[in-house]
Length: 496
Image: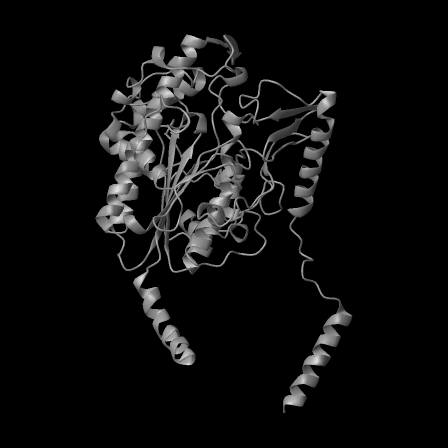
């Protein structure tokens, strides 16, 4: 009977697998979104579509970017590597660079599991057309990365000669010159001046990205799963939320955290709390527009009939300081800049809840690969967070790491379950995030915290020793190889 039962199970396995198709995958990738401005951390923020996704998924409250600036963070995502790794080695934005295709296997790993792969919106793995060194066209380069479909929207055009898909769209509408002039003026003068876009919400770049993403979803056969990275430029400055999104938040009703100084100077502009709240209101308007775009993607997947079996991952490349500690924009290791959203939602598989497990934004890549039954390329340092999201493990990382810098000494950060440490130039910072979440009390010079400081030094050293690309891994000496070959020969003869 036992043998009969086992035989029946083996016969039924293909039918069980056929009855549970692989999930569609949707990655919602945003730009410069601080978790301080998520509704589940800040009740003043309204994002109903993301709220519904988060309610059905696992919220990672301790997810960090590998670098608090666009390009290295996005390269980490598709390579599964840290900036200090060979094959990445980008510690800041670069004007003339293309990530090597052999170092970036994310989309190939997903496609190998039977998926159609796509990214629509901002890419930013390259700069200055450096892909031309090895490829005849950008499309050929993107295919080598493992992408079946790409709509590249590098950002709002600040040039009337913009040739991107969005630039061509604006040109057809007769809006390109006006948008280019408006953005050029903003970048030259002050990109944090909150002022409505010269285009209506229906012609804004995030709306264009959402439309292109919906078109991709609508055009895919239902019998083959898809993996779509929908990459939105917002809420990245300039602060140009369009139409009603520019006025939907009343600045006077917004609350600033205690780590925003009464007055601070940025790029020749002295900002007070009233001006910071005005900037924040526009920033939140851009967030609201992205949320509306997310709703369109959800409806498209519902129309496709796969929403109840769609793995959704929502994240950002880095955060935004928004006045905290007297800073704007990103590039810092403070929580507002270096911590990023991460929500994983997959009905019937992922538990709903929140976790303090350390995670990295690049962990999106192996999490997808594990969920879809794929095989992760060797040599990756990104780690699947699926065991945490499904409740099998409490954590899969000792620490989260971030790195940035354009001149020596390069800056590094480590965060464990309670403390965050970082070093920049000749100064060190140590914060107790449990007691001091706004990072207002630097403990690095306090004698009573010397052991904690040493502990964080040790954690960083262990991490660096554990995350080096090692081409000698698995090497067998010549003697060992000869003995192994001899043993195989003897075993083969004995069988004969």
